[in-house]
Length: 113
Length: 113
Image (cartoon, rainbow over all chains, first blue to last red; front, side, top):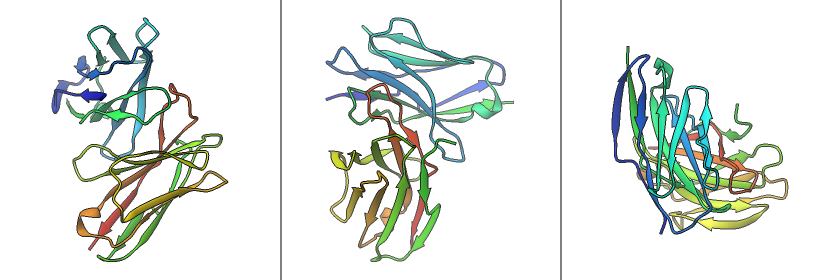
């Protein structure tokens, strides 16, 4: 069965610094999709970034980028120049075909001013 | 704005009662997902519909039911409510392809007293 593991329940970073959130997953599929969502205190679920497994190039969205290591089944999120508004729960998710997403337990990110 | 509309935003009701949560997906999205999120917990997948048909079922209690109508809006019915059903209920929609991210509504906060 597919699983997603986020091994860091909580991370903290100084404002303007860079932080990396870890995510590993387990699957026997070769073609799949990976996502990072954030959930700020307002509890909205917001898509941060996505990656197709068949693409070797790591996805980037402004200050957010991923390090996708397919062989290691690793999908980490790097946030550069951290801002106070980045404080949130971050969830990693895996999807095979158009089935439901498999979610990690989340990492709480604290930004220190 | 994700384009997914959930009503009501808040709902307070007593144990044993029945409530209906409503979701209008983004224009053009055929898939609708329902999730439950208890305080400080991750997302629990309840059920997925695709173009009116049930596609996948998660940890949905027998007291809960859902449907997707021809106009693609969806309703989640919760009956014989218990205190433990108090949670944030999210609806999400996607276009259907594997690389299509889920777009979340703002959720319905249910409080059972």
